[in-house]
Image (cartoon, rainbow, N blue to C red; front, side):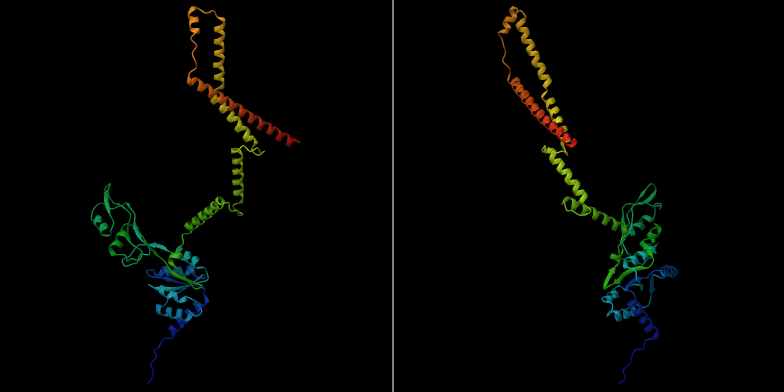
Length: 363
């Protein structure tokens, strides 16, 4: 019995053969979704991308045939078949995937939402005043899941609301409300779905890089690494100056706290000793103590020289002993005086050392 073979048009064979050649020729192959892309804008984008990128669009089945024929040479290329959704087209380039994504993103423009479109990301309506007067619009907003109230004679949105989540279809009423609010959540342009390079598939989430955020992360990572290296005393070309400065300051602080005589801190030690001496002298109140002592001696002298009356004679026999508080105060005064003398001794020793160091430098 004669076997019946399906007839395949020659132009289809040529299309598949052309796709196979392109896949083998270019190292970077991307899949773009051309849904909702107006023909005039597509022509403009083709002209802008000409030279660096090559775009071809055909039936999904022919694309899969071409991919199947090249998987022996392009390891992992067959994984692109899972991303041929919507109205797929293949884009070929020798640029890296992230530059391709950035170029296509720059050529996109905002557009109003249409009923039935799929949201690429969460569509949010922010709180705040609107230009609508109170009326049926309040009920329409509520039907779209937006809470509102009247403020100053105008309708105001009470809180931020996500009206469509990423991946969901946009409902007709929601699309109408978004248009009336002047919100354009969609983008018109080539939507890069996935890119193949050296056996790897980069999805939309990986390719969508926020450059400013990425730079900030690198800056923060560098700062944290530097601080960690300094904190753990890890010497590198970048941290050695900071580590030397830290070591010098730590050694200096240790020398001052332990009164270690060194030419690098001798001036600080002299100043420290002088301040301690003056502080102790002020605390001990030495001048006041000496004045009271002198007054007491004067009083004793007057007692011996002046003639005593009968009343004075009687009083002289009544000599009062010092109180406990007076004795304790006297002891504390003597202790403070001793501390001052010790500090003066240390001060003179440090001062002497300073002079000796100065004389050595002159020699």
